[in-house]
Image (tube, rainbow, N blue to C red; front, side, top):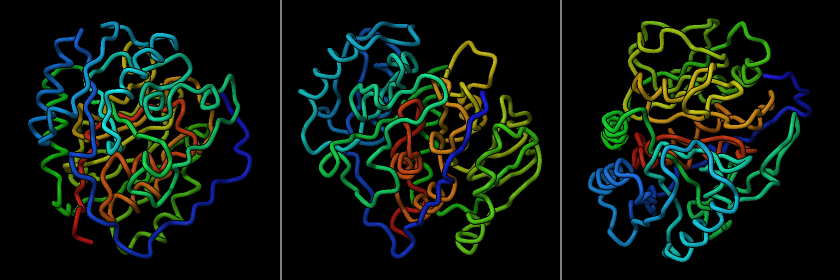
Length: 336
C-alpha cells in the first residue's frame, strides 16, 4: 500500500445514548440474482428461504459470468432495471454472487448503494466523496438519504456461502460472550487504525471485552467477535474460533479483490468462520476513512443494529470498498 498523509484524524462521536429500535426485517431487503449464473440462483434461493424474503423482493438481472469487473455502461443498464423493479420501501440490497465485485473504479456494493458516481472513486492517493450514511442515526437509508447499503453474498464455493448465511441467521439475538480484538501490527503503513484503539477500549470496554494486542498473528483464541488488523497477509486465522456473527477485516490495498491477487483476499476471513468482512477493490492508500472505524462498528453492532447497518455506517469513504457478509445478522437484536 502506498504511503499517504492521513490529514486530519477522523474523530468520531459515538452514538451511545440509547439502544436502537427494532432491527430491519427481511421485508426491507431485496436480493439481486444473476439469472445467467446458476450458482447465483442457488445462493439467492437459500438466502430467501433462511430469511423469509418475499418473492416480490427477488430481482433478476443478467450479468457476465466469471468476470471480476464490469464496465460503467453495462452496470448503468442493469442498475436502471433494478431501480425500476425495486419496491420503494426496500432499504437494502444483497447481491447473490461472488463475481463481478467491481464496477469500473468502484466496488459493486458501493455502485449499487449510490449508483455509479466517480466522486466515490480516486486516482492515486486522493480523498473521495463521503457517504451521507456514515455514522448516521437513520434506520431507513433509502427513504432518508437515497442510499441502499449493499452486501455481497460471496465465497469460494456454494457451501461456504451457505455456511456464512447460517452463521448470520444463528447469531440473531444470541448476545454472544465474544471479544473484540484490536490488533496492532508491525506494518506501519497498514497499522493506521491503531490510533483509534485506546479510545475504542476506553469508550466501549464496559460493554464488551476489548483487547488491544501487539502481534502480527492472533492465534488460539476461541471467542473472536471482532478482529481488526492491518497486514497484506494474516497468518493463523484458522487457529481461532469465530463467534456466529463475527466481523473481521485487514487494512491493505486489495483485500476486496476476491480472486487471483498476491495480497490476502477478505474471503479468507469468511472461510475461517467470520460472518462478514471488508476490503478495497482499488488502491485506497492509507486513508483510515476508507476502512471500517472499529469504534463505530463495535458500538452500533452491540447496540442492536444489523451487520449491514453497523458495518456500512463505519466507513466514511466507502466507494472503493467491498462489503461481503450476511447482511441481517444481529447478535444483539432487541437485547440492549
